[in-house]
Image (cartoon, rainbow, N blue to C red; front, side, top):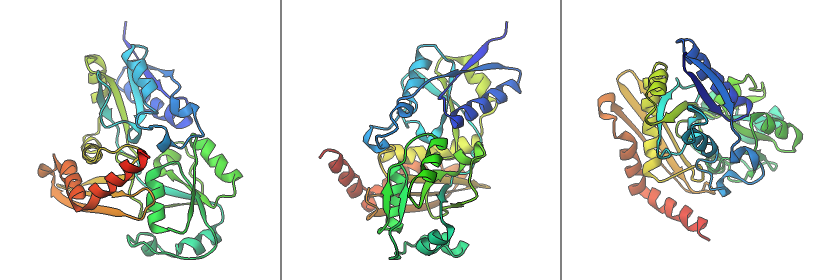
Length: 325
């Protein structure tokens, strides 16, 4: 009798889409799989801002427990939600090919948004330079401290509101609120065909490490699942996300720290961009590097070291001090 792999997943539409994607990849290679639904703490408390919840691992902890208790065989996650240090006994089994890593602004009034953000052409939208426009009050919603910090760095006069819930819930809240817009991950909306027409990519906003990637984990001694999942592991995505997560790991950051990173493979060259900001967006240290792929093994750690020596250590100290108040 063939083994049936039990795939653990959260119950949100996006999480289920990701789990079904992995199920289909397994089935394409003659491996049977079924979904097992697990509630996470992050899905239960939808009011407290993520950065106040000790958020690292909040969407993965329940699945980790189910995995270690042998209630499931593999778990599927949005990789940006996974702590850089996996729970003892759990290992990475595969990383799927990355979708869009970009953030989106979903807005309500195009004319008002254009006037406030000065989005008049692609060149301006892609500009790395912050610019300040003093117009009417403008309110953006997000639960991500990274997005909040980058937005306030660019638009320091704007107001940020907390927005929690799964993708569907957040879209509904934006529609029902008096906010001007909210920020979403492009991959999440596009995967379940919910990206609104009234949205625009924020090309200037650097993503969370591993944003747009899906990871599959299993128990470290489960040779059957490790072998089964290795079939659809995307090596390029695995390499780039490892560099991004190494950068995050070296900076000792989690979802409650405004750290961003993006590694991209272009032929034999690997490009990397990373930054760290103060929570209020007033301070920013960034780095950009290009190396040959053969020299990229420690790129994430090297880039993080340079960030720290160039002022990132002061930002980290300020964030730590604020948490201890």
